[in-house]
Length: 530
Ligand code: GLN
Image (cartoon, rainbow, N blue to C red):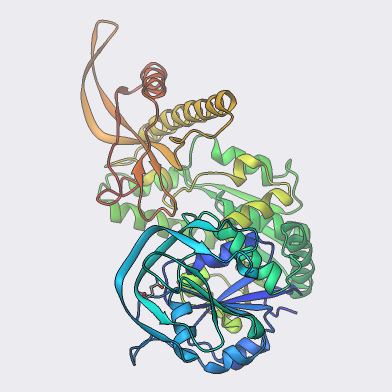
């Protein structure tokens, strides 16, 4: 029984040695329908044992395992009889601890490398004999530990994988979790489903069912308050809590007047009185109040601050009307937990303030975070499972300050209208073009952006429309391809699509006489404008 989520299930533990891909490892495992959690290499072995994992994966990391100060792990880990898979640093560490040799590699390998595998190894079952894998290492295993046999190599790396079948220990020098490793998912599947013997019970329908049970136990007949933003996470949290406790849940939705076009009404249509969810829904129309506060403010950081503070104030006023609540719910998700360094300490439910950033001001006894074990894609699946409309579940990322930071310079109701209308046209046309491409080609367009929106520049320029001089704003179109939103490139939307968008915006949105396309990548640019 998992204390925190109330889910009784098979579990694989990822021990994190500081690699860039630690979250990816856990996601890949979960894609095999096996629940997985990430713990720091500093986690005590007794704690790991107590979780009774079906398997353990050691991640990559930036250090060299033969150096004194590098992260290490107790040798006992390899004697528990639990299957262990070491990846890159994890593989090197396993060899080092068990008596093999790791040293600086004569030839470093970086990028896609052809690996030759022994397909008779359980780890490589169904994997092609030569397969492209993602490598990123300066050190190498020059000699495998005693009783290990080598089961993969490359031209420059004699031990690309090694195994000790008897002790169920496996070491891989490359990164199966990275999609560039063409058959990586199969390897991870072979480990967790084959070698560890997991049945694959982690599924979103059972997650929803078990969470509902758990929330009911935790909440009893208490009252829960949730700040609903209309974003994916808080919407799914609302859906889940509603299913569990119905009207004991109150959602406060603050419409700050900086949402995308019609978004406030869409949220209300789903969660409001005529929607499909059983809960108390309070919509606060705070547009005027926000615009008043923001009048004359042009500095981006000040704008952000005002929007954030005003949100807290509005939320607080509503909370006071409700009176004391027992629980404050938050849509915290697993990456927030991992990134705040809280992963694994199951008592941390209380140190929420570090995570979601919601406040002390509301009178509540406890925080409840029903999604704190889920990755974003799992949150979306849970949302669909709960019957939340696809439109909402697959919503693009949207910053907390909303359109406030997509309007350069001062925010006014008029400018909000312009950017809302332009943005709606842009999204509609891109979505249409993507759908048409998919229908015609039977595949997704490579240019399909991961995020796309319109922003309003603070630039006005001269134009001519209907033989008359205009002096209006320029709208900037942004579209990026990105995997993790940390880096991004401009998406190559076909010119004809951009032209249609430009025509429609100029014709349909009053106050705009120029449309520009932002080519900047991140870095040096950011995805948002302010
Ligand atoms: N730091 C180790 C090396 O350079 C491991 C690298 C890794 O885990 N990606 O070989």
